[in-house]
Length: 157
Image 1 (cartoon, helix red, strand yellow):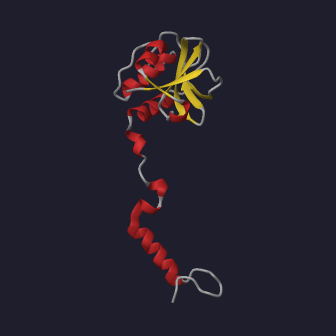
Image 2 (cartoon, one colour):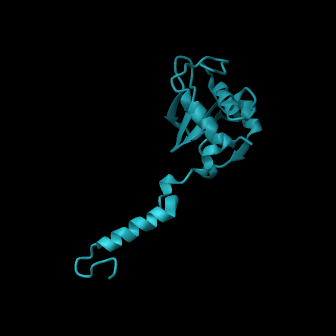
Image 3 (cartoon, helix red, strand yellow):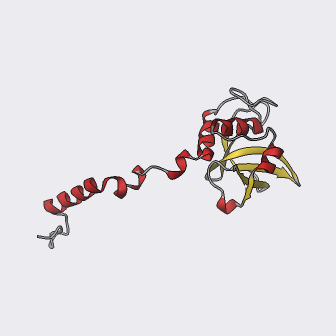
């Protein structure tokens, strides 16, 4: 008897049992969402999680955590917790990172905001065109849509 009943097109009891057995024996290989994310353990993804955990922390010029941050302080703190040492300012972080294109950016990469040739702000790419950052006085660490095309991307090595 086949797994499908020819008249109704429904799975027979034997077909259901065979399908359940195959999934059980195969483990997680048939369930993509259950497979571990290979990127989860990278320093970039660890840094992204650290930055996200600081949501709501107030901006303070020159602060590098653990409870107050300016933009580059948030990035330096997040990557330090992920095991990577970065310089203190956005411009120095830009100079230290590997340049990447918008098409190759990944979660955890750095987003540098610039005016002309000067980098004035940095955040950490969160995916979906969004960035975690500590914006300015009176604001808190937050995730926002990238609001300008005047950005460059960098990857921490």
